[in-house]
Amino acid sequence: MRIAVIGCGFVGLVTGASYAALSHEVICVDKDERKIARLLQGEIPIHEPVLQELVIRNMQTGTLSFTTHLEMAVRMSEIIILAVGTPSLADGETNLSDMEQAVGDIALCMNGPKTIITKTTVPVGTNHKLQSMLSSLTDEVSIVVSMPEFLREGSAIRDMLYPDRIVIGTDRPESVEDIIDLHRPLTSNIIITDIRSAEMMKYASNAFLATKISFINEIANVCEKVGADVTQVAEGMGYDHRIGPSCLQAGIGYGGSCFTNDTQALIQIAGSVNYESKLLKSVIDVNREQRRIIVQKLVQLFGQLQGRTIAVWGLAFKPNTDEIWNSPAIDVIRELIALGAAVRACDPLALPNFRKHYDHERVVWCKDALDAACEAEAICLLTDWPEFGGYDLARLQQVMKQPVLIDGRNMYKSSQLDRSDFIYFSIGRPALN
Ligand code: NAD
Image 1 (spheres, protein in one colour):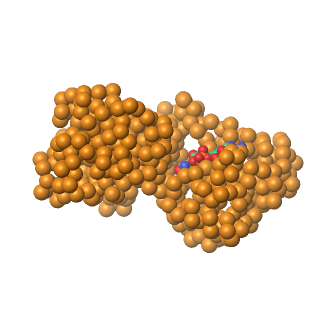
Image 2 (image 1 turned 90 degrees about the horizontal axis):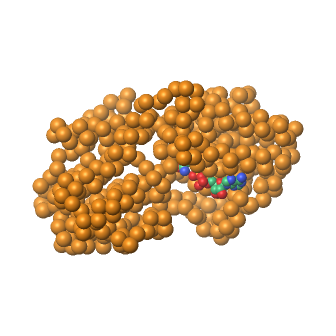
């Protein structure tokens, strides 16, 4: 099939490359000329495992191309996928201006009936508004289908090609055969539902995962006070198939755009129909407080941080990405600086991105974890990059002023610390040494 993907951000690129890998003819459109120029050179503006190889391979085979010419892409395609961004406004409401602009532009260049698929996360009711907008601008009969995207940064291609479910939200279930064909090689549950339920499914899924994270973090905080170990507790809970093990890793909470924006947006959606979401407000509060624990533990240990040098391991909001949006590291570094500490920070991928937005004279940007630890009085481990979890503690101790590790992701096991002098704190587990 011939597909136009509108928006070459994270979702658009992964979507385009994956459908091209399924042998569809895909043309990706973006209004950002510099981004398209880079993509045409094979330069991928985001870090995502496998994405670069997939894009280049499909460009070479001719199944994937990039353009700024929306009209040409729309006219040559039977299916149009909307993957433009929907940032949050200050009050948590979703900014739909890019969506509306894209749909308006598409309407002006329709040359026949098409299926328009919304992958962008949009508030309940938006796809109906877009359908009405389209009908008022063009006589070509098109259907708008909501297909929320559940992929995760860091494993997006795998999530796209082996999804847990494919959700097709439509008012015309009899007309979705071409969408099912589009996904034919993928073996996963296909859920055909109404548009509003599909829109809601995305928010409900992300809000539930955020709730699970805040829940286990709250349990961790209680574990610490009663002398229990949250990793053991979570393991025991996770074996219960009604609970499941994912998102039960206690730590300093979630970051990134999806959990943050979607939870906030769902509160806003509920508020718009006079329902106060007390649970989700608490989820956000618990998450906000959780990232403060790192500095609280340092203060508890040192009394005051003025003039101390603290290493920060991890700037990305999670491993395998250079995404720093709402990363816990932003708050932790800001607080360390506010309390008079000097910071030595490192991240395997996200350092350039982080530095661009949060540079400060009291932060030294280091090439790796060992470099960051040099002369530091404590290490704060904020992102669970695998390489941070297996450090030779004896080697670390040699370069540090004193051996203190505040593990915000519970990466170290007590057996790793047995033969070291490290003072070790983690989240919801007994302190060691
Ligand atoms: P993004 O902001 O990175 O990318 C959006 C792209 O759309 C930009 O390159 C922008 O230039 C382009 N664009 C905007 N208006 C356009 C127009 N009128 N014509 C052509 N191009 C246009 O966004 P993203 O991270 O790819 O996310 C897109 C949507 O998918 C968001 O609503 C998000 O909530 C949802 N989503 C994101 C993720 C994620 O992990 N990032 C996962 C699932 C769903």
